[in-house]
Amino acid sequence: MLALLDGNNFYVSCERVFRPSLQGRPVVVLSNNDGCAISRSDEARALAIKMGQPFHEFRQLEDRAGLVSLSANFTLYGDMSDRMMTLAAGLGPGQEIYSIDECFIDVQGVRDQVARARAIRARIHRWIGIPTCIGIAPTKTLAKLANHIAKSAERKPGSYPAQHAQVCHLGLLSAPEVDRLLDATPVGDVWGVGPNIGAQLRDVGVDTALALAKLDPSSVRRRWSVVLERTVRELQGMPCIELEDAPSPKQEIAVTRSFGRPVQELQQLMEAVSEFSARAAEKLRRQGSLTGCVRVFAHTSPFRPGPRWAKSLVVPLRRPTADTGRITEAAMLGLELIFEPGYDLAKAGVMLLDLCDGSILQGELELEDEPGRDRGQLMVAIDRINARWGKSTVRQGSTGTVAAKRAWMMRQERRTPHYTTSLSDVPVARA
Image (cartoon, rainbow, N blue to C red; front, side, top):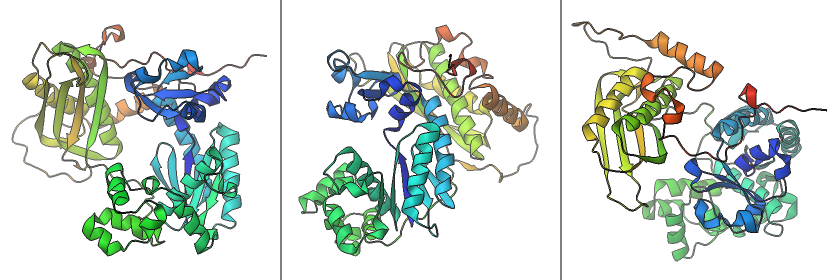
């Protein structure tokens, strides 16, 4: 048996922990540069605000309906996620952190799994203030579906039987009861069924999760893909997706950002890409990998008037590395080769390609001197300092030394404080 624990409206819930006045009010968390909605409270959903909807389309609701719109505070959300996952691990012996607000947990052998799930859910809410829902089933796809039922039964009374609210255990139900729940679930709500595949399924009369589960897996594979075949088999109760106790290393690492204001000068662009290179290198070292190629790109906005421009370049490295300096040097070389003046650049980024295990490295003869080749200990020291004292405590000079002049930085005019990670932002209770 597997459980899926999910934080409800996670980003909004994190904000409400430290601002109780937001309880019961429509709240939206916005994406980078305050572009669109990426998290909505139930009250905001009731105002018909859609996920991914541009901010300018619903901004008027701040005055008309009391909507509160906040800039994303990913530092806060990441720390709250760590706390939630630590508590969620008490549900069972194995845990796979699937996303910032979701984790799969192996509950096989746990006595009275529903009571245990309710106790863990109550503990998370009591200790850190995040409401959650839990779905339990024999496969990952069914656990995701059970979690969807648990959330919908609480959020939309009448959509599913009320006894499944907050915690839904499909493994304790009879086959006819499970079929009724599957029949009440639109096929587009099944994990692994995207908009395009969902439309194709509906075109052939497969409108519900139950109809999808009754398809022949081999026929599904021939007509669609092996991925959808796995989904069908998992809906039928056959585990096809294993629990990953440790996440597999990424095959590519990318750090991209939209600029707070258009960038026209090469110097500003180099500062931004230097910052992105440092972030990517830090992620690379965290998973113990090296990169053999660096791809750098920049482009104008497709939504703003003016001339269009977009270019990218892959810069191969002589030796695979995780050195921030080497990676940044390659990215700067790529920028100098592709940059053209006269354009309002809206976004840039760095991608690390051709990744390999950092513990296995092809040796070569030392035929020439290369100063500063081995700076592994320096990188370790920088990572430890930044982890202890905060991001960018130690950074490259090429990222810019005066924050006020870093025009490329994202707009976050509505961001709340870093309540849990910055000493100066810790809330103070006064009698």
